[in-house]
Length: 588
Image (tube, rainbow, N blue to C red; front, side):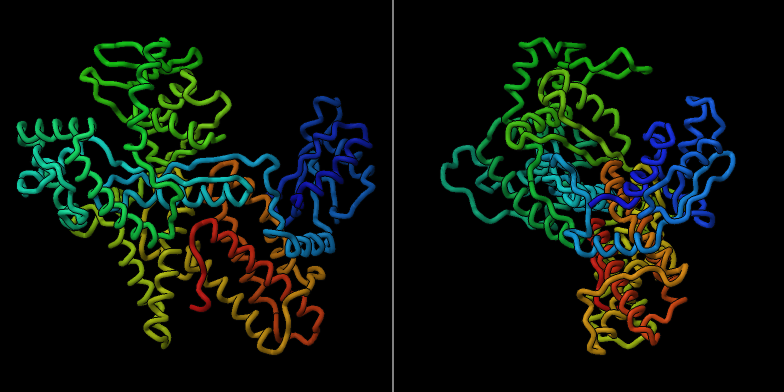
């Protein structure tokens, strides 16, 4: 389904052409002065130089030659040459009715769907998720859902940190604590135990202790490095321990991501790319793409157009060890072989931008991926506390993600039960839903690349630009529709008949922007634009609600039109929060 702005441009374009001007000048935008008009065109300003004519004369010519006005209602020329447009009331109603009758509210799907992999999450196994993992999970999940909404085939890959030195540390510490385990007996030839020799709590305690000790004890560090080497070269016992680490960690990770309503299609990690590294290194050398520089194997990625130095992409250290760049390139080898993606989108801290630039250039230069494949990096800023520093616990430590979620849910539970009597089970279930909306909307409403302050009091408020406010608006609409249905009325088949007030017209215009907003949010990988849209839509509805007797009026036809509009607004809001990764309760 076309966007409403496209229909306006078609009518205006025909007028530009008839008046003797280039049709491309009929570019229409939403007005930045809604008190004057709803849409505007600045094409006359742009065409003045080419046609050696005053802009207002061009604007007058265009208006005089406007023949078709199905979508354009009132149109005026304003000096020095702006064209101000108001949407025709019945056209707006017709468009919104078509949205309701269309699949997925008339979203204009991409004409050529792509196979896209979104690489997000990126936790290290054997370590608990903390607030630092929040942004990648929340933003990545939304980007994945938006791309799917636009018609693409999308796979979300968690890309686990499950290989390397951290595994050697855990194995070394476990060996010191429990040397009697069969994994450390070189003569053992039986089957290793099916049950892990540790719980997730023990595992989460082992890693930081081992990491700290290795910084102080050189012999211990060398043991961990050797254990890493043996693991990566297939040591049978160490591989068995590694499998236990993975099973215990992934089970816990899935539980925590489930609490965030984040789902990954692929649970692959750095380990999955290891088998591709030797061959990749071999042909990179053989084909002359990689060379030795100060003992390390590197790929030059500097380009003539660069205004600053871009260091080479290092793919092997002087001791033969792999690096993140090695693993990321090998992962692209594996992804290209298994999925042949048209695009891969990476979510990570914006401070990793140089790393991904090096990897992307190396992948294209060496032919690891086709030249036409899209490689995008969406770098996000830091989630900070009110002091402007990275978010911490009251004691100053890094907050576990599950504790943050629990704290938000507790805060929402208090707010839900403070002002009214409600069953405890229902209150807790609602608090869980609204708490998640508070967290996700609080993050996603900020532009991804920017740092932001995580303000619990503001994010859990039912007023202002917050998740709970959006959900409260949806619940308010549901309540009205339920009352209408309780009076024995049907909502199916009702039609929007046109605006009966300025407030209703404003709400209709906001609803009509849905298609355009979703398109822009995908093109720019910008979930915050969806947040801004539904905040405006919720505000427009609440103004309409306070100004209008929706159910109390005596005019049944007008009431039916109101209800038809409310059904559509509810569906739009629900579609938007779905791609943001949360849902609305039935009541609050």
